[in-house]
Image (cartoon, rainbow, N blue to C red; front, side, top):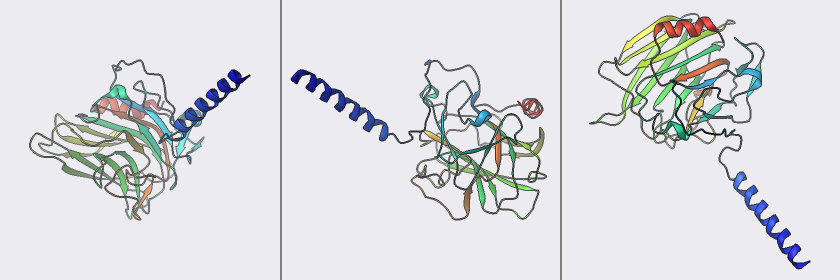
Length: 280
């Protein structure tokens, strides 16, 4: 009887310790997939189709994606379902270990998505590769406040490092016609580290080309482990940077997103047109 009691006590203590460990996790909502340990042969790092009220990454690299508990979905979508943003909602994507230092030495990148939104009043955060030490992230895409009811004012912010200087900062501003309203619009932001050119596309067509002469391949630092979708790096709870907290002029994205893609390469104009035309 005594041995049975001691075994039962040991079992209870083990269960209590396991439960405590899970409760101490930073993001208990993360869905941890099994990893093969082999890096996929694809530049598509993350793909969020938002189908069937699902925020999981459907790409091959296996970003670990969770929302802050307030994510909603809509049947009004380009395909399947879409993510319905809100001032109190955002998505976090934890970088898989299989990627290694892939974000620190990103080189080139493409961010592409479908969106539908009305004119923004505060600035809307769309995507951030954080810098855990500074106000702005290593790579940010957001919507600045603008007077037009249809023309969107996108801002793209970049930090990079080279052999002689840290945190070389660049800004690209793109005012793009016919974005806001009742129709879905496909946006793509392409930075080519080989040419130092940022290209912004609307519905498969070039809306802006900006030459950041000599900027070169993207080399980030202090990225942390988590990317933000539908938010600034500082508007999550807690903030993804020690550089600042929430700002009164900034908001999470209030609108809809669908088929959100993030690549570690600069897609060609033909690739962007294919994404726009495929809609799947």
